[in-house]
Length: 83
Picture 1 (cartoon, helix red, strand yellow):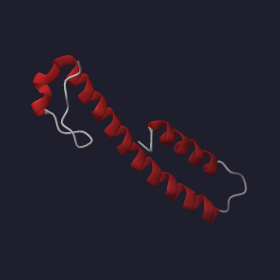
Picture 2 (cartoon, one colour):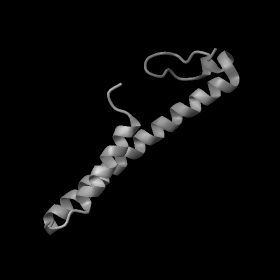
Picture 3 (cartoon, rainbow, N blue to C red):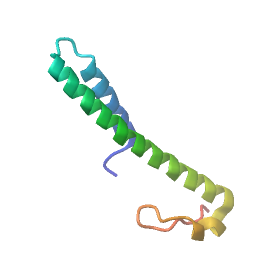
């Protein structure tokens, strides 16, 4: 997998640093704020998706293969029981 949640963390901190740069013009600040808002929206979806995957894994760990048929596929595969 190319992107990881740690990469998202790096992007968020990089954006925070850009927002805190001294000497930005009002136009540059407005542009960075717009960019930050977009990053926050996308980041929220990524975090929600990761939380859903953790919840699915927890359900599989708790209930085993009997819950598998009711779970959606993740990464193109149906969920399998954890041995």
